Length: 142
Image 1 (cartoon, helix red, strand yellow):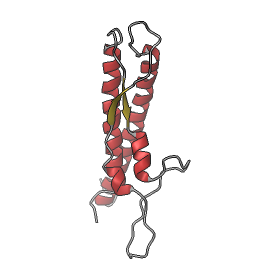
Image 2 (image 1 turned 60 degrees about the horizontal axis):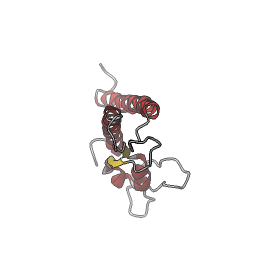
Image 3 (image 1 turned 60 degrees about the vertical axis):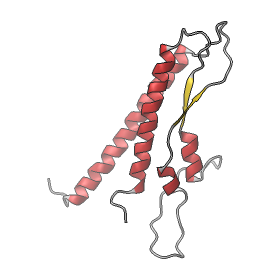
Image 4 (image 1 turned 45 degrees about the horizontal axis):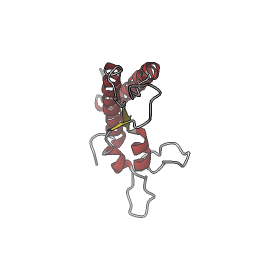
């Protein structure tokens, strides 16, 4: 049995994706005036949904099931989800600008704000989970 629940590593991967996304957005903003520059995008959520087996189903994420017998029902994709990594890709979309640059400053700033909120939410979730583990280890004592 693993020491930590598997969803902790998924939260860690989400934090890594948010960090990579923040760097990509900052890189895009730094190159807003570079002719021919194509914006960087980070793909993580769709890879995670595919690993969990929920891509395109409209379902929410499934919790991992602990099994004690081979005939018990098994959860989907938890092991695969732990291995998902963020992927940085170039945005091939065309630009209305004459220099071919497709960076939109307002859109990048909005994505940066959304990413900051997402990172904070993931960090809060991870801290809460670690606090629960700490409480279990110390049996509620300080």
